Length: 126
Image 1: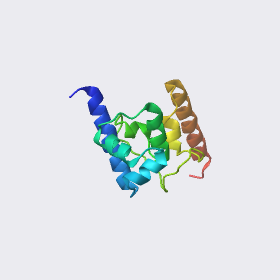
Image 2 (image 1 turned 30 degrees about the vertical axis):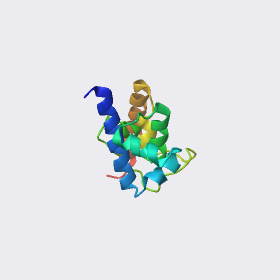
Image 3 (image 1 turned 45 degrees about the horizontal axis):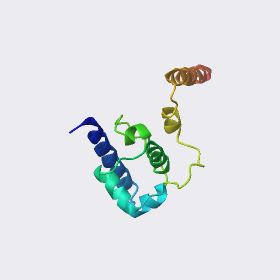
Image 4 (image 1 turned 135 degrees about the vertical axis):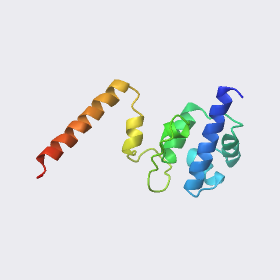
């Protein structure tokens, strides 16, 4: 099986897993992401490809990490609460950090967070 097909299958498996974690039907997920339940069935089987834009929407609206959804990582920061139907809510910090495309920016932010934690720890009575 070629790599593209394996990736589509992994996305389908993860989509199904997340749907079940949230206790949703294929029809409900379809409404949340704006497609028919038949399309969700095809995505879950890996029969149809998921566009990049739809993949981002799925991750946002199913409150999961896009890297996990794509099978890039096994780290799955499950966000509490129900899925949401619009991107208006504040994203989970893990998701927001993972969406930063520039590795240098991620490294800089990581350094900033470490510095804040160290400063906070140093100011606490020991």
